[in-house]
View (spheres, rainbow, N blue to C red):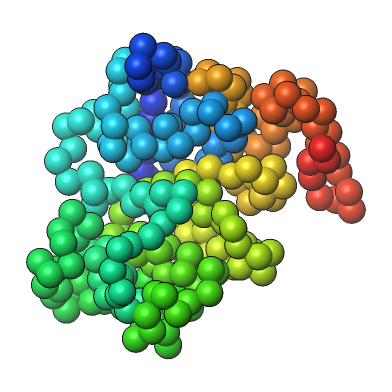
Length: 254
């Protein structure tokens, strides 16, 4: 089992003299799935970008396995980040898209893959069930297939941490379940998954931990069965949320 950890200590991010994130502290370890929740503008996407090293924190410290994130030169190999609306401005095949995951900091024409690199690419395609669609154009895929292709791109990096901003956005329920089950399998294999979701029931059913943000502050953090409660969710979202148990399964009603 892997033993990686990413931790934030009193992290703040200031943009245009406004604190988008204010004094956030949390940690996530191998085999855990942290979902970040909150209203629009609460700082969810900013938090993921900070963890990915795409923007620098204004205050505090972000550590990966005890080492400051700013001191990790090859962090693109450690953190796989998928933005809210993943896309690419090129008519690539599924296979060529996933190949880019081996060297995410290079242009497609610069990528020359070794046999070991191709093993990771083949594994990623197989894991998401797209091996037979490798030659298909991205433009020909359904929404669910395209999202699985971008997930394979992230998996091909073979890093220990996946950072996913609304990975089920705009997908039908069948495609959502496919993506969620794939992520659950990755977590069971020891990956760290940190995701943003708007659907509270996705969080309750699949995640091990929740970070609830409200106006840039961390309102609640901890295991879902403890921290995902009616009182905190109602305060965080500004609407009445009731966490109940139906047929042995917890769910959110709002």
